[in-house]
Length: 408
Image (tube, rainbow, N blue to C red; front, side, top):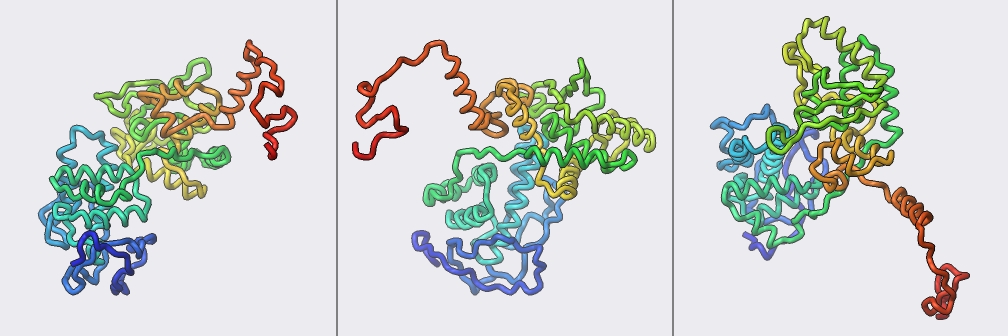
């Protein structure tokens, strides 16, 4: 067995995947990731591909799920235990997101184990080298800092120091603490969504509700949960301005505060049509719901998280535009900033506790705009700058030139 300080890079062992559908194989698998050498004659290498994930989001795996191909508890098992322990701390949306991460990690661990790149499928038995190999693989797929946090939580939960040791031993595994602000929709993309929505017939209920959900997200900046739990009565019109009451904010019952968010006027034409279509649909199915965007259950009618994502995905495919509800929310904030709304105001209507969150993740004044604003300020300053002559300036300065002379 190769010692940790004797790690090396080499091509992966050839394994027969002739019967494996291409859709089950990762597209970006990095075949030159350094790994801990293992005994290739043992059953650590198996000629089977990772199974498809058929779990329907459950935090209570059965006994048959508790032992993986390595004969030990798997990432999904520990993930389920961790999720149950955090049930009262995590919000519903957060729980769904974190649970999906653990299931994805479980599939990747099983895949790497079958290739012989990990010595076990059990996080409790991971060595620092196993952690190195797994994170290296995930990095080749553009791992995020939030996923690293989820991984750290699991190893802390089960009491395995391999994660901390690996990061101390291999500093390159650490994800940068800096946060890159993701892009919002471009003006032409917003215009494409609005134009496509106007072509949807009011009798096409599935089309109307999909586009209404996406347009409302773009023009109100609501989070997924906030949007899903909106009622028709939460929309108000005062002096021609539409607003929506956010009665179920993120952190509801804890740190979240109810607020009122102005709706961008771009939404007015299509939402007016949507209200008519919604009324017809409610009558047709005999529903008794107040939900603004209807789900599949007539009694309460609220959308499920997966349904909301499905609506956004369908609009994305229809138009060939990469969008999701988080991108819609970023678009709302950036459009307000671009229109000259103070970042402190944008932060409030978006439900952020501070402007730092708004600027770091959602919207910020564009650099060119900032430069122009500062230039305007200089022009209107009361105190004019004093006049200087060349004798008072640094050596090499010539007021007739834009830069010091090369011979000085």
